[in-house]
Image (cartoon, rainbow over all chains, first blue to last red; front, side, top):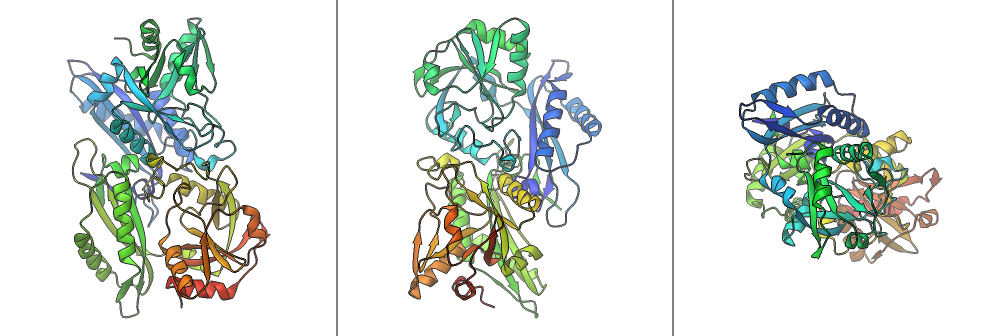
Length: 270
Length: 270
């Protein structure tokens, strides 16, 4: 059933924002939704980033209760929340959409480990400083480059991508954040001037690490550091924690103990 | 009437392409469509750029004949053509959409002259070399940054934007190409490694200039060159030729004779 008009700015201009939220459904058909507060907060921040009004979060929660309640398939699913800036020709109210669909098998199997390739994102690591129109940290519907990068990964026979900056730093993956364990510290790459999207799963995992006395830090990493780290992972709300096995064919040291701890902190312990 | 499903990849990921084509309707209600062959060719190239199949151009022409024939309002309008990669959850055929709507008044008044501001696009002028996943020259639906830049221009009290590279060159405008007249040569900025979209209107105008013996060239321009050029313009399929009056408040030399010639070559002579 179509829901967006031909002039909806989300469709015609990618002028909208979204969140993908994990839903786990028990054999009896009851579901739990992962970190909905954080996702709704980021959805609101993103929408403000493209000039949208404050979403009615109570209405969103009612909608989400209704559609998640109607989803009865045991297993893992993705709740996708979208808000667009609405019709463009005859301007109207924003369009909100929520869908639930089965989690793709590839996102589940990524937990066993992934091979990645490095691809340039074309930006410098400070390109987003004082340039809010570049929408750094805003999770917009304008995701064509992320899709194209994932297709390039497939063409190269690997599972995922880590984007690099033109000045030679690792940034993030198209739909995940990067974490590495180096010299006893869990390192992630910084938001802000890099344009990297703040990852709810990375933040949750590293908050847990902090509480358990594991050092954490946020700094730019060079590709060559992946040759010597004691584990590296891509984290997102759907897969959770995906250990990086190889980078452009070069093996990355595995750290199953830290993988398990990251999963525990991120709320993905089995 | 909604036309796109909630899982359409054009909506959920900006994973689609588009063209905006000028339609001029006479007082008797008959319309002419500007450079449709060129727009359909670019639409096909763009769709190939995001991995889509070859569009059925004969079917597109029939659709366009039908909706343009039904449009009877004298004046100028925009025919928008879009193709998305179709539904994402249950993959299906691409979605094609054509709409006609009145040309916005601001696009018409831009012909009187525009004030512009320079905004960084975050990329280097060679960021797109050997990086097809960045979709340089592909007119995708992922236009959120272009919209945000236009909003920044409005916030600054000006009409439009010229994007700059982080290494200090002028690139293009969010929805137009740049032409300047310098030392007897009409200069535009190069496609390819810059990621600049090949402009049908710029190409048409410069082809006309070539035929009339006016020198043309394609090269990177520095912002400071706008202080000494003998005219600078933004060109696109809707407005045609918009003379740049000021750049961040600094006046640009006007060249009404060349403005008229560019309009003639581009097919926008009144």
